[in-house]
Amino acid sequence: MNRFALAAAAAFAVSACGSQTPQQQHAEQLRDQADAQADAIEAAAENQTAQMKVESEQLLNQAGQNGDYDAQRLKVRAEAIREEAKLVEQQAEARAKAVRDAGEAQASAALAK
Image 1 (cartoon, rainbow, N blue to C red):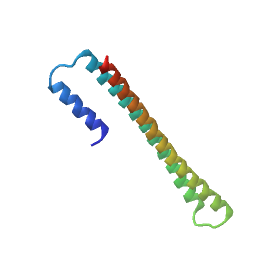
Image 2: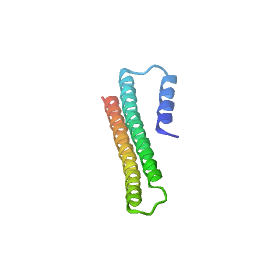
Image 3: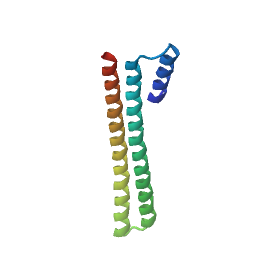
Image 4: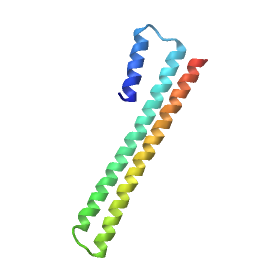
């Protein structure tokens, strides 16, 4: 079950048990804001990597099956772009996780008050 589904289930369980205290509402808002920010980070990375993958494919098509130096250089550039896209995805995942974790920490601190 993904994090969003867990958060939704928790929110439903809390709302089903009665009204929330102001601290609980604030904590929920903090979690929601963090999730929205993390989702935006992931979406931006997906857009960026999609463009990078298209560029890589274009370079490979341009290189064709030729074995000359120009084709080899294009293939190397295409592979480098693919590797960079992987790093962009990993970085986005790490940033999104950090944002979600920070939101959860802020929510816990709000509930502890």
